[in-house]
Image 1: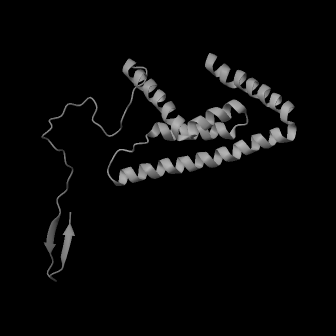
Image 2: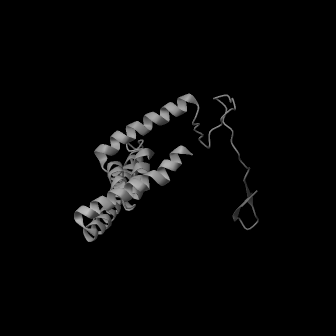
Length: 163
């Protein structure tokens, strides 16, 4: 509750204060222009970086390698793009730091370390579908579903498959 309160009340109040302060210095029209410009440039930059990460993922998968840029980078670019579109000075700074590759790597390192701590402590559990979790199976046994198909010869010498 406390974090959500900060996120949805205190941060917008600080953003509003900063925008009013900048508006007093620059004037209302340049301030509105600055907000629109950062939103447009931020959306463009987030789209550019997102496309670059997706292209790197596809190239790595084509080489049958794990992508160097992980899911965390894609998530940070998405959140950074949303923050850049949101009007405000603090959100623009935070969004830009999540979209720019050098600062994104630093933030991704912190996020990765946080997730590792949460997984190690048991607060976060990771499930992967398709794995036989909890079943002990002999490694030499392969289960196969199959059906028998027979070739039946008709008097007119045409081959026909029947089940």
